Length: 386
Image (cartoon, rainbow, N blue to C red; front, side, top):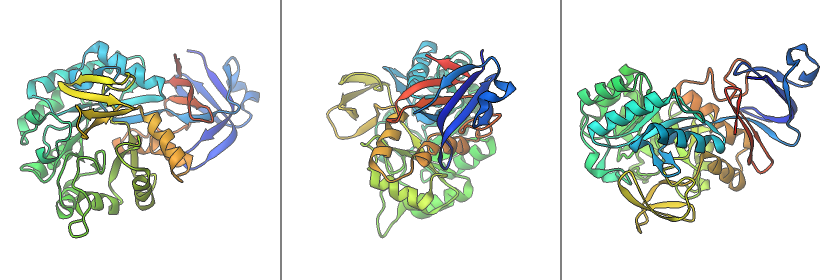
């Protein structure tokens, strides 16, 4: 693997955009960051890449993504995970958590094993963990989840999920208010798995209680979740007012209106908001009718719904699309938008020591983006993806 020197680009840091900056990639790591690095002996023999007029960005980290190009993590195969991995890398996502919705127990064990093994074989975006969105959810707000697979918490099942995931189970989505919910939060915390409230009808008080038990994340906030009411503020208000909670938001223009995300940004800031795609197999496919994960879905004009209903069934867009949409439609600074798709998710899942920003010693997951935020080049651990 050759060293790469990116010169004269605009570096996106967690707070600002710095012009005329150089970044040296060496041995799969970020070796040097600064200006005029071309004159230093350390860069001798490096491939020179002209970054003039381009942004140098950390690779995106998507912690909630179900699929792409007709493939779903819930129906995982080795080839399917490779297809998803490549589809993500093409759009600047260099690391991800394959996300598995509620499924029957034996099916869940099978796909967790396949995904865990695929970590070592995918050649696009890296698998850095697994997100289980269920099965211990509230059926009242099941959304596009498989209703026949939503069930009460079972401790023996959880132990098997953790074991078969080979240390990769990173997040489990749950409804803290249902029977066994608080016990589940306790056991996840003990096992080192992040407890995430999702598909939940939790009240404000129930959410605060869950936070005291160790809940640290809300999933696709505002969607499939008890709405805010002036007499019962609910889980959303609890998440907005609590500085210890990370919250996922989908910025594709369908799931959450930009002014809502701006309110969340003003209350919580870029250090606690996590942009996700929540994409399903529709990503990269033309409009039409499809079956994803045994569920009939309609894709039309970038929107995925359950059949002809108005119920959203995940997203058809990569994380990059949400970033672009938020940049065009909000007053949030670009550096903060990028942070919410890079360093903040890395901090939320505990991998910020190696991912999430352009800093010496971190993995060389780096992007070049043009002024419209289109992807010009992608490096994953210092190797150019093409």
